[in-house]
Length: 115
Length: 112
Image (cartoon, rainbow over all chains, first blue to last red; front, side, top):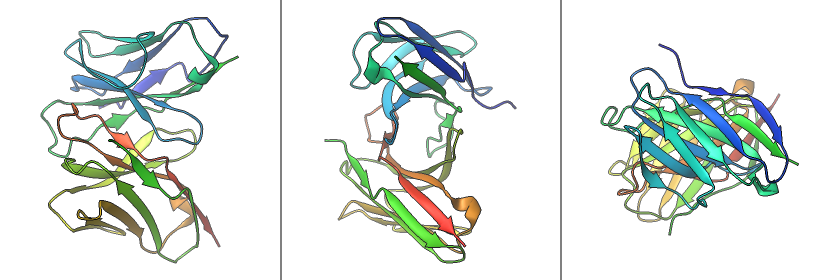
């Protein structure tokens, strides 16, 4: 059983550009969440996808969008990048309904730097 | 509102016990969690506690929950250098589609 993987590991963009981050969920997991972790902070919830539909969103503007594919891999897209978007982006997957304590399995993250 | 607070830094001697504290605001959270983050790695679930429990012990880890004061603590017995990491407290408010609300993290430094 493979864990959650994310690509790329690191990325450098400039203000105004667009970026796509990718996540491959753990086998058998149908729910994926994305978090933004700024330097020195805890992760902040961006949104969650279940069966290819967004079913929950945090306090992030619409320029943060996502997709989940039938194979449960997913993407996080950020348009019109701003300097404050520089952060570690974490993907977490789980199997909806499994694990009464709602364990989410996190990937290693993508470090995005916006110049 | 949703807010989780933690002290930012803790330094302990190897072999001593570490206690990391956390306060949270949402009393509806069914589960509360402790995650560990090592440099260059994602978050690893260390342990969790159900909201109707006061204490949970798991090998070297002891979690204490004071629901009245909305206070959670993690005690690590016999702290080792390999325990050096950032520890995050997290809650999962009910009706929140299982999103996790994290604190800012406590950096634990273990010295000889």
